[in-house]
Length: 418
Image 1: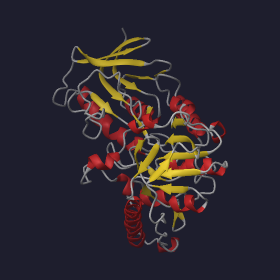
Image 2 (image 1 turned 90 degrees about the vertical axis):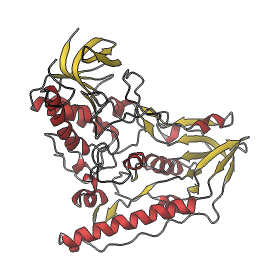
Image 3 (image 1 turned 135 degrees about the horizontal axis):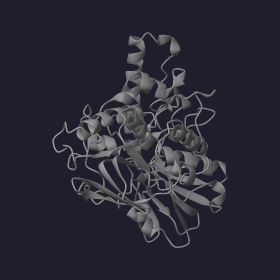
Image 4 (image 1 turned 135 degrees about the vertical axis):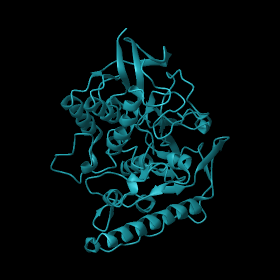
């Protein structure tokens, strides 16, 4: 039964960032990975997926992008190669093909059971990611027989989708990208739109994320927002990474023929029922966009960057008037439903009393206070607005490793030396 100071669960970018921080403090640790390094990027994403963040934002502890396309966007395969290279360069102590089956308290520390045996540890970092399982709402059970129903884990490419109409449910980053490529493949697409975060790809001559990074928006801390629970549940930014650096918002989609419809509420007797609040939902997203761009303009002026181009306000989102509220799924018009409704983490192997009623870990900025010695990485707005981005792992791991080192050193309540 091997033992170590810290077990890190997951060898994605978050787990490897924490490993690099632990190594920098000479803290004994091991990284357990159910597949190979960056497993989810290689095996669980659709073919055309690209990062939403430009390459220059692929920053990790001891690593910065060195390629010749800083403003480009990595494919899933390129991300996997980058993360694997990072693991190798840092000599991360990764045990691949080792699936964690249980984490529980044992003798004041933790017992981490795997399909390769048990590890004893004084602390555990959960870095298995927020995207382990595709989130599919219960309403999917009412999809009429004969229609294909695909989750984000199922969808790979347009060629695998039946000919005919497609209903894409969800208009965050995944939904808009999939709706666009399905439409361009010749399939009529209807996009069901709920709450979303509208952003332009470029603003005043620079990537919108350059502005948000430079102005400090992405560094906003979890204690600085009024409602952190809501902030952590917001959909991903409505951005697409493409060589053309194009904006893929609802206006762009409707402009090429994608039909917009409101949030899906129910399916009754084969008829899909949608909310009529689409105009209000879009107006709210437009308002938040204006507020963000105003903030950028104010920061640019204060920083003396007025020469980067004029601040152009984007046209309000155009929606059907009135928006349709029903779609008969029995007519044959729709052949496939794609549930672009996000992902969720899988903690079925966690034998600790730390989950809320929605299956999320209760934590204070990644510190699981109910179980001293347990830490969390990679969740939305874990410690700052950029926590769910690759770029957020460096700062979050730096914060958490300090707390973890203090715990191992017996300098925190409930720690002590074991």
